[in-house]
Image (cartoon, rainbow, N blue to C red; front, top):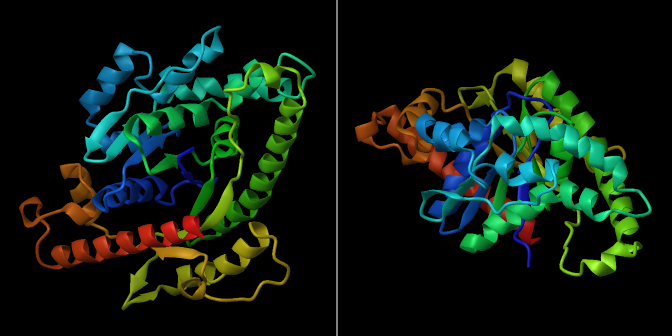
Length: 336
């Protein structure tokens, strides 16, 4: 049985996606879940959040098989096959499949294999390559008996992200409260539906092929890509109310989400806090973020010894409550 894959995706960058995944992964591990985090963004910012630069340099320079997501798929660009990932243990129940800036070079391989997967024969190699990320993440999850896989990808609509989404069960959409995030949301819904439909055609083509009977153990991902909601990031607050400049964009999110992602006709206008698809409104937490980065820990694990005193201590408690509630809401959607 496959472990659920939860991918955080928006083709608009700068919405705090990586920080969101980082903190949610820590929260899940604190709640007793076994978590695999996969960094599929070629910028590898999530890896940088979890690992010291010296450790990342070691992984990239030694280039051992499975040491990063790139070195798991690299053999597919030649005549080799997928390599099992070498997980990095971050904390009890929390493991990382490290990212790699060289992953960007795998984009061309995926682009080339996409049309090849609709041929009449010789389908195994293209389908193996296109589903590689899913195969690798499940290998990692099986190593530790994971309960969930959290995935970070870059802010684009390229071939790497398409292959990651093919392997994704559930999608969370992080949003900034601005025009550009809103436009990104309008692009994202049709893209998910298109990728899902195109993968379904490839699955049908594979199942109808003679080769599918020769590879009984080759399990392809379903390509569910089920959106379960959005998270409003960088929500400026003054006296507990959004600043007007941000509120006018925030108030358009529920309607846009329903139109673009859920394809609802004439959706009701409402505010994010009244929308069941709004999983959370994550505050800035301002100076706590650099404090957490300095001590290489999530902001809700900062202590007075780290400098979290006075108002900072209260913000630490608020952050823990916020991320605990977010984890619960996501679980509710996944289990529904």
